[in-house]
Amino acid sequence: MERLLEKSLDDQYALERERKAVEDVLNRRLRWALLPLGIVFAIAALYLDISTRIAIPVLVERLDTVTVVGQRADYDVFSLNAGAFLRIAPSAVVSGVIASWIAVWAGTYYRRDFIAPMYVLIGLVYAAVLTASLALLIPLNVFALDLFGMAITDAEIPHSSELSLFSRKLSGIAPFSYVVTGMERAMWTAAGFVVFGLVGVRLVGGLGSSVRVSRAVIVNAIIGIVFIGVLHSGAAGIHQYLFDRFVQPSSEEILDYDEV
Image 1 (tube, rainbow, N blue to C red):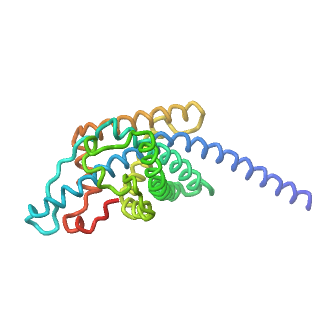
Image 2 (cartoon, rainbow, N blue to C red):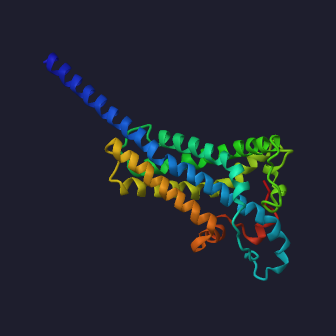
Image 3 (cartoon, one colour):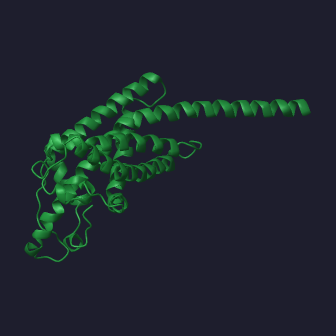
């Protein structure tokens, strides 16, 4: 009887090890599959963030034109200078890599018994890590640009000099303020990261093989490039829509808005 019991326990342990090995492989594949979108949505978040923050001085000036309480002044977004944005984009690229990698690792750390909560956790961790990473890396990126004489000017991105996070004299509180004011945008970014990531994985039929993982990486990269292209070009009004719906404060909030 003892031998039968020991054999049964050994079989259970073997099955558990096999299950864990399979899950580890799937988790690694998911990290690679979602990585392109993790980077792309970090870039998109920074793009929208800059669009929002440089609009604040203009909206403050236009407060007198607001006739309905609770509404904001009209504001038409514009495409950011590509060269200037590309110089600040490395902070978003690195943040996207860090955030997506940590998010998928944290979300898949335990067993995959509940898929929906797993992806919710991935999104929450991605939002938190992305915001914190940007808050730390943007000032470093700005410092490096200033050091090499490549600082972003108002001629390239209007009102950029008024953003304390882009300032050469960065205060210690600026990164913390960025985290507080950037979490809402990060949550929307995380939602897009997870949803588009799932679409890409489903389009290739899952992550059951290395070939499918490669296809998922390519598909998600294409989705991300198209999204960034549409956002920057303003096609279909996506940039304006996101600005109006997700990141634009109301007129009453503008005066209290901390330009960070």
